[in-house]
Length: 476
Image (cartoon, rainbow, N blue to C red):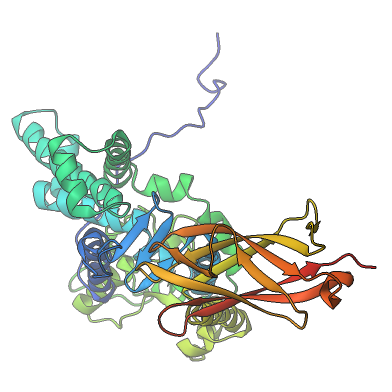
């Protein structure tokens, strides 16, 4: 028989639910403002109207996958302009590197969707079940009428938050008022209902139940962030050289030799990740600063200086232990690594803005037909054929004149037309076939190739673009 001492130990540890205590302070207030701003923008953006004329949707922010376009207020991105989206993704990555290098997991603590919706779920939980002690007591008590009622109310509110989250997401992909009507009447596409169901379920589970487990086990960023940080990165830390040895504060008793930490556990009780920052920097810490607010409140009550738990860097620890003043925040923030990230981030942003303002309202693509490279007509004329694709991005139907400039004497003819003008519907692509012809015995007909520039000009304004190509002759 195997004795208890020799039985293998399980590596699995059941999750202990975390019930953060309510806290007030600078960082908690900042988190509330950011939560309201980001959730407000997410839920309300699809309902903002933007007049683009009769031929375009009037939704300010719209991912129009059916017509393969992206609208953001006055900006319209077409499929061939996907480099704008790629540039924004690069900026997002560089921005994440920059903020992590400067202030640790500040993105995770303040702006990550998992953090934002978890904060919202915890707020609802606190409204329904009470603060930390009341929620702990409810969690431990057996199921009765009170527990069933409070859990039912809480889960219903969580479900509604998840439903609003999934519903808001699908509104970004089609006209929001029309889709809402179709959803209510059961006429929406099954993909819309499926998407809402999936996002409702994930929001309900991730924000309500999984919470810190998503950050610790599912998210890869805690394991990557170390490559972005160094000894000058500002992060949440405990000044153990000031707080230790810790001990309880008893009225009327001397505290000689005791540190400022009175082991009140306030920093642990408010932590949404359930860690003790006094044990040092940990992978689970999301740098939200709530432990700073809790500790500062305790320090105010016992008449000790604030900052026992604070944002500081490893170099500050070395200096403070030696009795020197810490570096200024700006010296931590502006250092070679963060400056490099900032320059790269700004460079990509400036390039995107320049490209946005330099792009034309007309796109033209000219593809020479190479099989054969030229045709000799019955009268000896040399003809080259080109497939021309025009994209009208002006929002209304327009006529476009196709002309050429070349040192060679060439004639242009559009297939099926007596003139060189074509009409392109608003926001659509029009394809046509263009012929360039050189008279028998002309320099262009006898040369191997001649440079040609094909011009496309709109019937209104100064919109005009060109495409460079070549005319192939006999080459004799």
